[in-house]
Structure formats: structure tokens, C-alpha cells
Amino acid sequence: MSGSDDAVLELRAVHRTHGVGPAAVHALRGVSLTVRPGELVAVMGPSGSGKSTLLALAGGLDRPTGGEVRVEGQPLGALDRRGLAQLRRRRIGYIFQQLNLLGSLSALENVALPLELDGTSGRRARALAMAALTEVGLPALGDRFPDQLSGGQQQRVAIARALVGERRLVLADEPTGALDSQTGEAVLHLLRRRIDAGAAGVLVTHEARHAGWADRVVFLRDGVLVDTTAPLGSVEQLLSGSDR
Amino acid sequence: MSIRHGLLALLERGQMYGYQLRAAFEESTGSTWPLNIGQVYTTLSRLERDGLVRPLPESEAGQRPYQITDAGRADLALWFATPVSRTDRPRDELAIKLALALTTPGVDVRSVVQAQRSATMRALQELTRLKYGSNRPEDLPWRLVLDSMVFQAEAEVRWLDHCETSLVRHQPSDQAPAPPRPGDADARAAARWAGEEARR
View 1 (cartoon, rainbow over the protein chains, first blue to last red):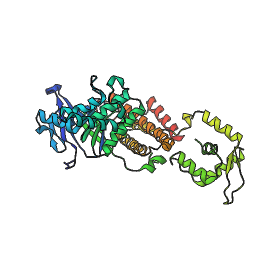
View 2 (cartoon, one colour):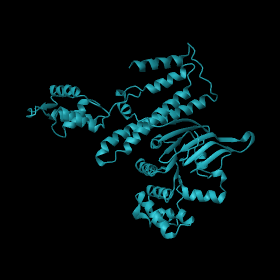
View 3 (cartoon, chains in turn orange, red):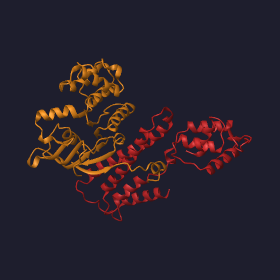
View 4 (tube, rainbow over the protein chains, first blue to last red):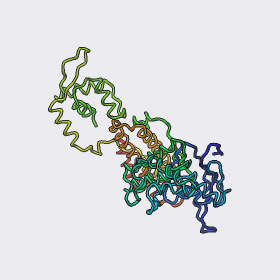
């Protein structure tokens, strides 16, 4: 998997080891992965296989002990803390199971916050935040505080915050959490739509049904990518049941 | 499910002739179950023999519509009220294959598991793609058919995950399982079970 000019995310032979000596834990061992615009890649694997580590490295929340991570061609290792923080705010959206919405801010303010922290004027940040809330189907609830929203609505606000502005890379870790299956599906639908509009995404999940939304599914085992699947476009065969 | 109950359900909407029935059947199953017109007419004649439908006079175009009878309605109601029996479904070749893989020397069971998981995952991706493209309200029956296949595929992946975890616990090293001894009662029972399953 060589470098690519249009890759939004590139992991090149990435290693992540925690600790040293005999007690060292090798969370990732030489993982390479390229994600292009319009592509959603799901990462599956048992607990402890390195899924969350991969996502943290992709988002610049953690640094590899070997190899390189690039976002839009920019090697994250070459950035200082400030540069990294700026890139994270501007280019990368995170959707976690823990929503991390600020209870003292309205839904609209929560969504606008990363933009305002980044120096966008208040008025423009709120306009962009409103567009993002509209995208997730909550244009009328911008004034509500998190505790006045249902679980599904809170998750949508968190997604709006991840998608607001010009984020090209969306990283999601079990984004549907404890949502019921319909609401969870709506969340994935939103994610898929954003990806189809040109973003790139990585979805960490242990739910096969959710990974089904991805263009590619990669399987991690003991810190190594063991397999990759992509649809073959053989719908007729699938429906007639003759694939068995 | 039998085609006859499918046709009865369609006739409950109103009278239809053969080609209409075939089109409506395929539409309501999202073409997951293609029917040929011969099957439709054979089924209709059996339904007529059993008094569950009655033919109406031919139209000017030479098409003969059929109508559901009261007996047909009762049969249909009974069908809807009766749960589908699990024993009526085809045997699960995959479960048998894995059971055999475990007791066959030289087979890398984890590879078998992973190959199947990739294939099933691929199917899930295809199904999800189809669902994503079917958003109109009138697509609901079709989406539910797709959902059924999605949930089955998901269950299969979950079971494969479970198999893999069990394998890891039983074999900390990557050694192939020991071949069963001829006198091993468990192996004999497993082979007998697998043989019976395969014969069904």
C-alpha cells in the first residue's frame, strides 16, 4: 500500500508499543492503511486487537512508536503540539461513544465551539453550526441544553460537532453506543452521507451490522491487519442465496 | 414459506391473473425469490383443486383472473398465525463445516473462520448498500426483507467471533488440533451427527 496523493489518511507501517522490555505491550505491529475521499473504512477485531489505538493514532491523539501517520499528506510527526492541535480542530472530526457534550452550553454552542476555539468569528461559527445541526436533522433544537435532549438527539449533536466546518476526516469509535437499532442506523446514515459528499472516515466497531456501511472492512488481530473485504457487486448472487 | 401462501396473500388484495401475480410476488420479496410463470400456474391450479381460489371468466385479452375463496382466506389466516418452524429451514452447512474442520487433521480452523467472516461481511456490505438505496416509504417491505438478511449475516459474524474466541482459549499455541483417535467416542458421535445432518 504505497503513498497516494489524494489520500486523506495514511498509516505507513505504524507500530505502537506501550511500555518497554518484557512488560511491553505491542498494540499495533506494522499496520498500513490508506483512506481516500469518499471512502469509509470499518475496523473490526476482538477486544485488545488494537482498534482504538489505531483510531487514536489516526486522529493525532497518540503518537506511533514506529512508522508514520499522514493526514491530507501532512506527516503528523512533523507537527509540534500547537500545529497538531490546530489540525485536529480544523480537519478531523471525532465521534465517540462518550459524547463529551458540555452541559453548560446549548446544542448550537457545543457544535460551534471547535470553530470558535479556532478563531472563527462567533457569528460565522454559529451559522456553520446551524448548517451542521440541520444536516443531522435538528435545526429546531439548537437552543436546547444536552440534558433536555434524548440520547439519540445528543448523539446527533455530537455528530454535528464532528462534521461542522471543513472536516475531511471523520473518526468514529462505536458511534451508535447504546442507541436503539433505528436511531443507530440513522447515525450511520448521516456518517455515510458525509463520506459520500467527499470526506474520508474510519469507523471502529464490533458490530458487523454497522461495519456493513463501510466500503472496506479491515480485520485487526493482535495488532496486525489480517484481512480486508470490499463488496464485489454481486447482489444477484447474494439474493438468490447461491453464494453458499 | 410456500409459494401457495404467497399467492393467497396477494389475492387477498384483489383478483389477479398469472402474470400480475408473478410481478407482485417478486415486487413484495424484492426479487429475492424469482418465480417463473409455470410455477405460478401450477400453484394456481393446485389452489383451485383445493378450493382455496376460484377462476373468473377470461378477459377479452384472454387473461383469466383468480379470486381467493373463504376457505383460502381461512388458510391464509392460519398461515399468518402459525410461526415458522426452525426445523423446516435448511441445515446450516457452515456449522457442520466448522465442526468437521475441528476434527480433520491439517485444517487451519482460524483461516476457515476468517474466510467465512470476510465472505459474510462482504454480503453485509452489499445488503447495506441496497438498503441505503431504498429510502422511499413504499420500499418498506423490501427494506424489511433486506433487514432480515442483514440480521442473519450479523448473527453469523457474531457466532464466528464466538468460535474464534473459543478456539483461542482451547489452543493457546497455533497447533492444529490432534486427529481424533478411532476409539474416541466424542469424535464418533460428532461424525455421526455431521453425517446425519448432511443426509437431511
